Image 1: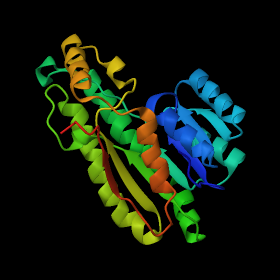
Image 2: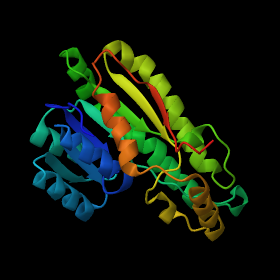
Image 3: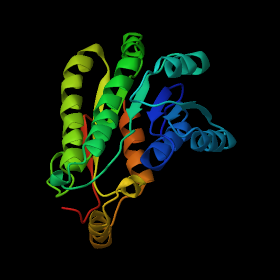
Image 4: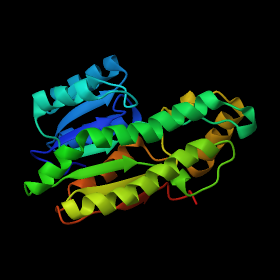
Length: 250
């Protein structure tokens, strides 16, 4: 489905694949200009070309959300102007038992899943508040996970980072809401994506694959549809917390 996001300017992180790519597609198909952020420049270029071929507007911006985003912000502003819709989707899911001592994995998840969200939010806060002050819609969407509320063996650090995103979103709404900026926290359940391909624990991969077989999974496009729906509501309507799960996932 498509929605009315005409004249909106969006930034989507982690746009090279999975949920991020599908969010970018549905936003562009709904009329938004979309800046695509990810480290994988070639994948971004392919997606930007696809959007352009469909008649949309997209800008590929190779950027690491854990680092300095000054150049990325300048590129977006030079091409599209002020941003009024930001989707913090970039994330990594790694899984091992705590006693494996994988500090490298812990730091990578903290850097991407938490620090990355903070960096991107900070980079575009003035855009969002200015858009709201001008009387238009302004949206900050954070992609968290149902794991923020559940217990999954071997996923302790990943789920902790997503719990942080969920709690951060609630607190950001207390700051941004009075300024007219909507904050939406989206928590997908089992969803088809590349996240599992990052896991180097074969036992965990088999376990999650079994969950998919037992309960099914959402497509990335179905999660993207939720984001587009939420951000296309009347500007005084904020869908602040959305859990989206396969029907059979409990």
